[in-house]
Each structure stands twice: as C-alpha cells, then as structure tokens.
Amino acid sequence: MMDQTRDDSVEASQLTDTTREGTDRETAGSTNVQSYHLTRAAQLEALRTDVIRLRTELATIAAGSSRLAVLEANVAIQAVENKVRRHFVPALVMAGVVGYVWTAFVRPR
Image 1 (cartoon, rainbow, N blue to C red):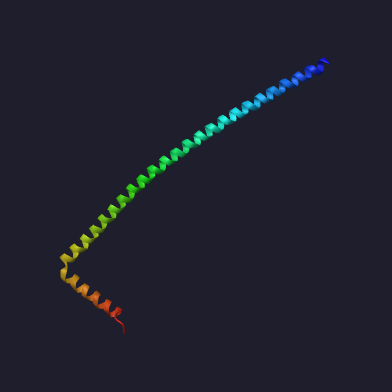
Image 2: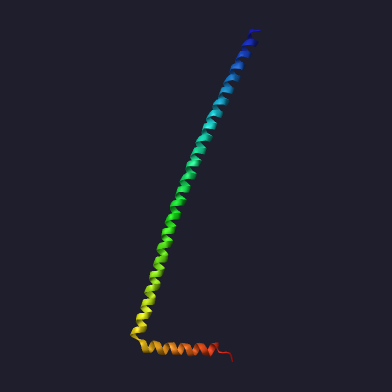
C-alpha cells in the first residue's frame, strides 16, 4: 500500500510541475506576443514616419522639377526670340512659307 501512495504522490507532483510549466509557457508566450505586438507597433510607427518623410521629399522634388521645367521653357523661348530678333527677315520669310504650305494642305479641294 505504501508503494501505491508513493506513486500517487509522484504523479501528483509531476502533474503540478507540468501545470507550472504550462503556465510558465503561457506567461512566456504572452510576453512574447506582447513584445511582438509592441515591436510590430513600433515598426508600423516607423513606417508611418518614413512615409510622411518620403511624401514631403516627393513634394519638394516635384516643386523643384516644375520650377526647373518652367525655367528651361523660359530659356528656350528666350533663345528663339533672340534668334528671331537677330534674323528678322529670314524668320519672316520662313513664317510666310510655313503659312502658305499650311493653307495648301488645309484648304478643301
């Protein structure tokens, strides 16, 4: 009878140890899950910050690009105006030829 009691107490202590291990695992698991969620939240916040930073940089680049395009267009217009002013007669003749050819193709037959 003593052996059976001893076996029951051993089984009870093993059951208690298993329950403790399960509780420890659950606590460790919940700690891991909480740290994962904190890490995930921190990563999301970092991504949001990066998106905001990239959005402002993109707006700056777009504004700079549009200013550059306007500047280049103004330079091209100034170059054409200067060429026309320097060579006024040939430019006037060329405009007449272009106008004549244009009306020849556009005029209904």
